[in-house]
Image 1 (spheres, helix red, strand yellow):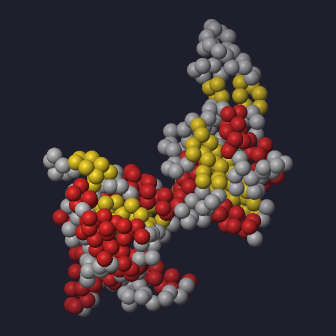
Image 2 (cartoon, helix red, strand yellow):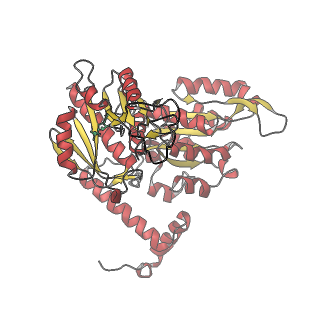
Image 3 (cartoon, helix red, strand yellow):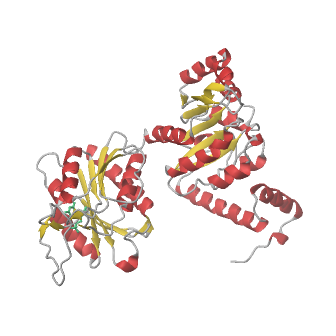
Amino acid sequence: MASLTVRQLDDSLKRLLRLRAVRHGRSMEDEVRVILRQAAEETGREAAEPTEPSAAGAQPAAAAPSTGLKRVLLIIGGSIAAYKSLDLIRRLQDRGLSVRCILTGAARHFVTPLAAGALCGERAYTDLFDPQSEFDVGHIRLARDTELILVAPATADLIAKMAGGHADDLATAVLLATDKPVLIAPAMNPHMWAAKPTQRNLVQLQADGVRLVGPNAGEMAERGEAGIGRMAEPLEIAAAAAALIRHGGALTGKRVLVTSGPTSEPIDPVRFIANRSSGKQGHAIAAAASAAGADVVLVSGPVNVPDPPETCVVKVETARQMLEAVEKALPVDAAVFAAAVADWRPQRVSDSKIKKQKGRAPTLELVENPDILSTIAHRKSGRPPLVVGFAAETDHVVANAKAKLVRKGCDWIVANDVSPETGIMGGDVNTVHLVTAAGVESWPPRSKADVARALVEKIAAALEETKR
Ligand code: C5P
């Protein structure tokens, strides 16, 4: 491909490019790369699906990041609580959400677009009449290209404008143009909160379907002031936002069971048999199913990964405890058995620590553990409509997985190569083959979170199919 240098552009184009690059904090060459990438993505999208012209006549929007993440549009209002909104961006991201930001004029007195943009991984939007913003995204697309609009902090003034249907800046124009759910986290002085106009406006907003999180009671930024008006904490706001987004996901109304992690089979009070499973893949599947709206029960062996949000986690140690917890969780619509269950356990568990005896090593007699997957998949009644097993293999991965599918009586097997050189055991990336009665799909290497999302999408589609 012939190389294009910025010097070859005419002056007016160069000036525009320089302006755009400065605004985005990029070099002119990087800006050209971004424009070309966006144009290529747009062309690809247009080829795949003809787009309708934007209602506002704005230019085509920049591509949504191809991460498959659900997006929240966070509108930061002008209150001292705005400093918490930067932490809120992180808390939303912790829940697997992608965040895009708008800062009102007043918000910019408290936090900078640079800080918000750096945390979001894309520029923060500020100006309704910024031609560049309109070229990049357009306020109508900002209003629609999201799962939820979150206003935090929502000041008394912003609430009043929303209630009155104003649209004199980017934040209010977007709020008026949206067809997406809106959640507000009010933050203001207790007297402003209690004031009749504010309460009137809140009644109006709630009648319009706007949801509220907080405000909480507590101390205000002003010395000696306390009462209702403190913005809810970022964790609380992120939980409320995630709950609103989950509702309406592809697995809404479905109950999904996931097993994860190793089991630990005691030898004596201090020793046990275990394996190298980290629980990362199983926990990611539980998180993805929950994010898709499912009611999730996660039965987990001992792991060092955090509990996925919004899931019911049942912690167990042994295979027999895991089977008991799984049976208690039934009925479910889909069950995914990602746990690395110990195949055997010591026949006898010593009540006291087994003493070392010089020259005489103890003999461990092992007995087989119940096969949880096979037990559930072969149930005559209460078998989940979709049973998914895992096969961690070190050789003949697909052939072994096909045999396992039949032997265990499950519907799908997710097979992966866990030879030490793959780094899959305990790592963050997984290369899997999905084995079903219809055939084998080999997926390219993906993060365990992406494997989880792809599997959850397949599960949702399969459950939808069974309804027909
Ligand atoms: O036989 P293998 O351990 O390779 O089978 C793996 C699959 O069976 C996984 O889905 C695992 O969770 C499940 N399994 C089980 N109970 C066992 C052994 C394996 O549920 N005792």
